[in-house]
Length: 235
Image (tube, rainbow, N blue to C red):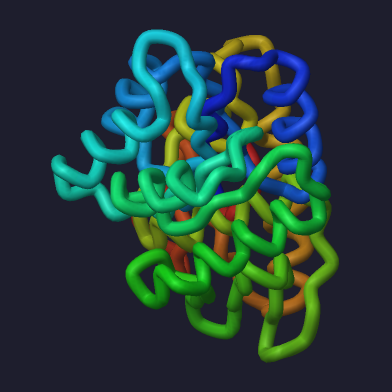
């Protein structure tokens, strides 16, 4: 899952970012209200963690503008304020939940899971393709209902493929969406990790579900197709 953290305090933002990444989330950081609005327009997020007191545009304004534009991404407001009127104002602006600072990180994770769960099928709590299933809330990958052991990064790779089944995914896209990195022609980080995922899926399913599209990238699909690497091997 991809989360936008809108927080101008670098220390707080870093703490949240590190904790979420350790849990396997992809995280973007915005330091002010304008940047938050821009990122929310460019990328699709599963949850937005939104501080109230921000430079340029406060959290109430950001939430209100996103809702007026018809964006339904769950918003969890984070603030040191705990006055009833601020809670009401935040919810009226379109926030789905409210968490006062300081907070325990496990409580933050629980709130995030609850917001995603509330989103229901629209945000696809469980992703499926043939015998493969990925529970995004429990952070579990299953093959024929049996757990498949994946690292946090491998989980993100499988998640991205399941969000784009039978579509060609470029290496550059995986770097940007899973690693938050720009393309480096000298790096083989994508090939190595996708190769590990492919081997685990093949061992568990007996199928070459992740196939190489030579010169382009990869594709999650059943059976060999034109353009796929021979036997699904890495180029």
